[in-house]
Image (cartoon, rainbow, N blue to C red; front, side, top):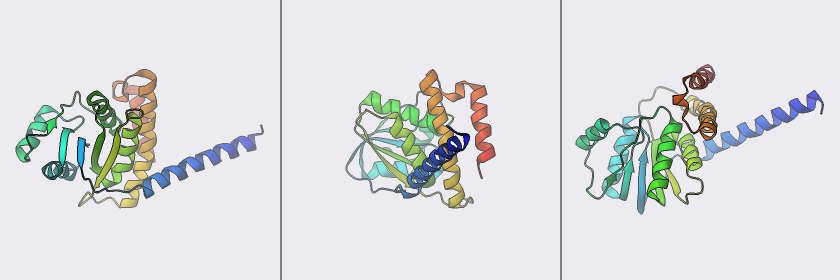
Amino acid sequence: MSLARVRYFFLSTLGLLLLAEGLYFFLLPRACTPEGKIDLLVVFQGSPQRTRNAYQLMQRLKIDNFITPGATQSVLQSYALRYSVPDTVRILPASQRTHSTFEDALLAGQAIRHNKVNRVLLITSDYHLPRSLLLLRLQTIGSGAEILGLGVSSDGDPIPRYKRNINEMIKTWGSLLQLCYYRCTGRPVSSASKFGRIVDQLERHLLL
């Protein structure tokens, strides 16, 4: 095969991957209208709006379990003091601290499999939802769980939406690298400082 054909094949494949990722990010609904029974409510830490919306949902939906991956016991206690939690909701403890969206999805996926839940609602920022949903669905393949997503608007964020979306698309590749590393080694990237620094440097150079 000639060099020109190899280059054409590589660029065509890369173009198709970028097109598919772009369609996934820009066509995926940023919000759903949750209703019915939710076996597990998952909120990824970040903006205060995510946490507030999660605790508000507990007041109007039947939710069995709730988890915030990476949240320490002191953080969960501060949430409990600030928001009212129905007695029927079981708060699942986070087994360890997290350092990335991939690790959030990893811990949430482990909780989904361990507790054998069927219907899951993930809450995060609207621009963060496509990557978070993708990672959580990859972590729960074969579990039979239905993963729903609710995107929360981030009020007062000075970064334009198009920049946030492009940055999230770039960060998706970093998250997938972390997934590959975990599948190969059984350890998260945060435990391998050298590889983690490489991923961080790549993202910093590419982000807008």
